[in-house]
Every structure is written in C-alpha cells, then in structure tokens.
Amino acid sequence: VVGAPLTMTFLALESTRDLTLTAVVLAASIMAAMLVRETFGYSFSTWRFHLRGETIRSAHDVGWMRSLTVGSMMRKDVRTIDAATTLGAFRKAVPLGSAQRVIAVDEGQHYVGVLIVAELHSELADGETPVWSLARFKDAVLVPSMNVQTAAETFQRAGAEELAVVEDFADRVVLGLLTESHLMRRYAEELDKARRDLSGEG
Image (cartoon, rainbow, N blue to C red; front, side):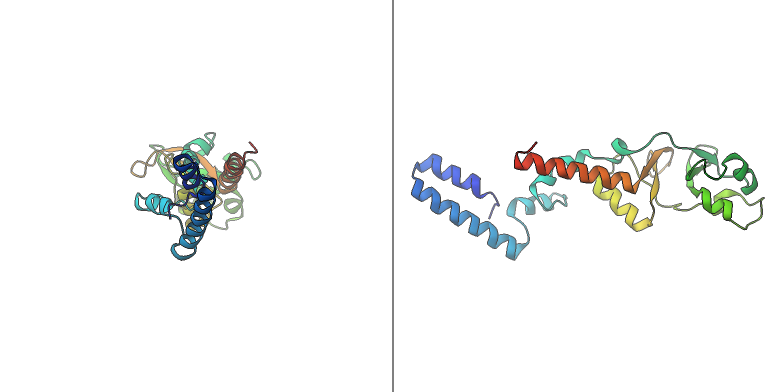
C-alpha cells in the first residue's frame, strides 16, 4: 500500500532473517503495490504528497522539480523598449532580423507586453501607433519562484513560445525572458538525469 516493496522486504529480512518469509513478503508487497496503483491511481506515499499540495506522480519527481525554477532558467539579457514608442520609431530602433521579440515596458520598467518584431514590421497600422497597442501576452508573465510545471502550464494557457519573467505579479518589473523550448529542454535533461540516478547509470 505504501508503494515500497523493497523496503518492506528488507524490513522483513532484518527482523526475521527468514529467506522464505522474506520472499513471501516481497511477493505480497509487489501485489499490494500493483493493486493499489491499479485501483487508486498511485501509492499511499504519493497520495500523502498530494494532500500536502504536491502534484507529483512518481518518486523521482520529488526534489528536482522544486529546484528547477524559472529564476534558474531565465535569460537576463532581455531587450526592452518604451511602450509609448511609435511603430515607425520602433522599426528604426529594431530592424527586422536584429531580434525576434522585444519587451515593452513603461517608464518604471514595468512589463506591458511582448512585441513580436516580424509582426510589427508587417503591421499595416499607422506609423504613429504606439507599440503598446500591438503588444501580446499582456497578462501572461512568469515569476522567478515558479517551478517547471507551473511555468509550462502558463505557457500552455497563453499559447506563447516566449514569456517575460517579472519580479512579482504586483509591480511586474522585468527581470528576464524564458522560452518554452528551453524550459522543455531543461525539464527533459533533469528527467533523464533523475532516471539515470534511479537506475544507477549516473
């Protein structure tokens, strides 16, 4: 039920020193674990983590998912521009090909939105149009404390490939940028590392 058949087996071996009984305990523990997973969905240990607010589904997800935060993955060399800049001035300041995305900020360096450079260069609006009106993902931001799962959910909801990282949701001072591709690559790397550690390949 706990989901640790080997632990139960070693406890039985240490307490009884009876190999026959230990083999029976191992078989019973494996059957109990399989039955619980089949009927309940996950082990008792994982269920306890769920009650504490964790959303893990297996033992090797515990630790590293917490440490893999947006703050540790974000890029700090983010390019920003005043949100009041006109479309014409933006095209002169950010030529096509010089960057893919630019973050629009107000006078206090607070996040306004993401400007897709290619879209703004092909935009048919008047050259005097302020770029803030053309910004995307105005309400979708990340904060450094977010873990990889929460960040991935934010990317999915926003339908974005790249999001700004802000200091907090209240002030929204821009700290950096994170791409979904980098997030998923780092997740895959850590998942593979956890798998290798678990199997003893590390």
